[in-house]
Length: 342
Ligand code: CP3
Image (cartoon, rainbow, N blue to C red; front, side, top):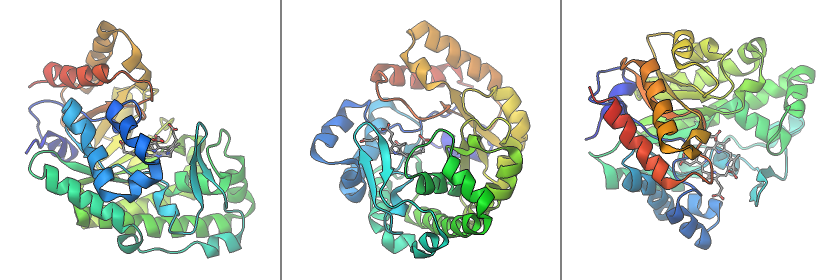
């Protein structure tokens, strides 16, 4: 077993720094684009064999130290009663956004084990293929980020509708977050049971919140989920972006490893997280478009900040971008392993 990723999650010594990439399966890969000729994104997610195949593509192609299940953070919302579409060029669109107490009431409190059994089956297939070779990461969206999509109906810049609900109708907001926390806790525990070795909680839009609002409107729900995962006995990674001012609160909510985006200095960010935890990150995804010597200079800079301390997982500061050259992804994996060999 290549266990350097799992060892880093547990803050144990490693032979070299582990590396994987958020959104490592996707449109920048020719193999994935070929799959998308046949199926839509949601169709791939719904077909366990296809989802498993896409999960394995970057593992075979680049030798990353972990596989991440191919799915989407918005997937659990569908059996909850949400009409979701990935519109071309627009990102996700929700056709029946949540606005009122009745809308929250109408969302089904699903049991993810049944409602998302295709995801569980995809995990089992991947697990069978890579058992004893590469660790497998499961994931879910954090309640704040999911609620933001549910209320805004899609992506947003200012999150005006979501924040108005917090400020105008806090009881409706809290009822929604409570429901999401219950579903996501069950979903992640079910993923662990189906074979995920580690799970990552994506709070991608958390940086929209002030520390006070995060503490009141989001943190308790993320904490409930990360407590449930801890109780299940597997490590977790807690990720957000534009989260520099929130890291101490996110760390307090839970996670063995905290994700850092590229706007955060790795050393300073690790101090905010607390040295008893690991960190993951934090190369700017756009650096993968730079000339090779510039990529190497920046990979070295991150490794220098981490100083071979136990608990560093190399990753980007956010998801890999669509036009990223595949050769540069492979090169970064090799650089990280060579430059960090103990
Ligand atoms: O990491 C992986 O390889 C696993 C697969 C994965 C996807 N989405 C597949 C996907 C993961 C981990 C996600 C998480 C996700 N989805 C997040 C959190 C991570 C982040 O980037 O902040 C968010 C916010 C979403 C919601 C979402 N899904 C958006 C905003 C989009 C559109 C983005 C775009 O680039 O168009 C998606 C669609 C999506 N999910 C794609 C993939 C590969 C691209 C669409 C396609 O293939 O048609």
